[in-house]
Amino acid sequence: MVSTTTMPSSLSFLVHMVPLFSLLLSFMICSSSNAQGLPSPGYYLSSKVSTINFDQGFRNLWGPQHEKLDQGSVSIWLDSNSGSGFKSHHSYKSGYFGVAVKLQPGYTAGVITSFYLSNNQDYPGNHDEIDIEFLGTTQDKPYVLQTNVYIKGSGDGKIIGREMKFHLWFDPTQDFHNYAILWKPSEIIFLVDDVPIRRYPRKSDSTFPSRPMYVYGSIWDASPWATENGKYKADYNYQPFIGKYKNFKLQGCTIDSTSSSCRPPSVSPSGYGGKMSLQQNTAMQWVQNNYLVYNYCHDPQRDHTLTPEC
Image (cartoon, rainbow, N blue to C red):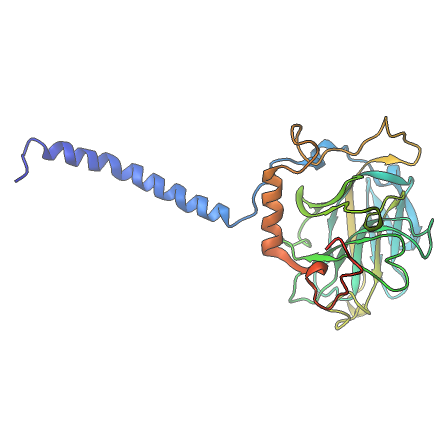
């Protein structure tokens, strides 16, 4: 038998606990929902690097009639006559290289829009390269972002690519997004909107690019391989195919820089010794768990004696 003197206080306790329980339940639901989305990297390297106009850092390399400048940004396009490409004024030994890109919607199969580092003009047939490439697609499928590294001719003749391919967690045709390469003497980190998506460490001199490279952007027809290994080709009924670039960021060590006066920016806040923080690693792992669609190290068709870093 319950005492009538204790009932009001028990009811009062329950009445007060119900709102608290509801609040706790709401928090748990929100936390679960957030956990399913992209974790914050916690550090935004792009905000630490000054933006420059296109003509401050670059010049047209080919297809000048397919390039349009507009207040520091640039659009380049591909049609049945030509594509276009640009190149940095300077060659770099390391650094942070970033740009905001908006891609063409609709049918873009066979078309590659790119931002990359290379020294192919200085070392033809024996060059190095670090790539961010957007592989065009059909109207019902998402773009593929391909990252790649070539070392001392592995991109020449018999190709030895080190591709990791991703889908994106947003539609890259709806707005500009930031894409960047951080090239340090010890590692290469690819970033999308400041989220690290891939880290390529220097495990040996033979598997890491160390010679100076220029920075390039281009749009071109790669129908033989770009979309589902060449299954879908560029269709010029959909021309022109336009790539839009802005917010250029070049903070690097040029070939004229001395090692004492120049170092690439740190990927993380101070206190991490230049290494990615736990929060950044968590964000990168989330991307790779959810959006990685190809990893050359896991391809059973590849000869991994040629890629010993795997």
